[in-house]
Amino acid sequence: MDYGVKFNATTSGKGRLKLTLDGYEKTSFSEEKVREFKGVSPLDESQWILHRRGAFKADDR
Image (cartoon, rainbow, N blue to C red):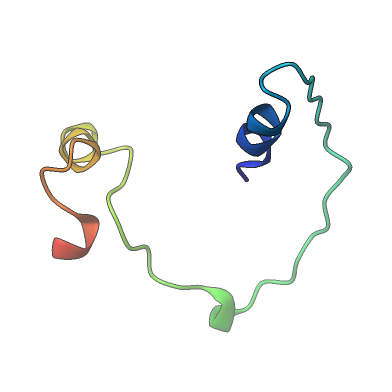
């Protein structure tokens, strides 16, 4: 996911990177693929800000 950053560092900022979506494949839904959300929800603005500033870690909750 950080390919753009690595590309920029490799080309000293002189390269151009253009990405396009090639497509997607639907997956089958099954209960064994579902897992509980862990972490701070970005929709909870006050806790998200505290988490981003390092006031607490999501694992401490």
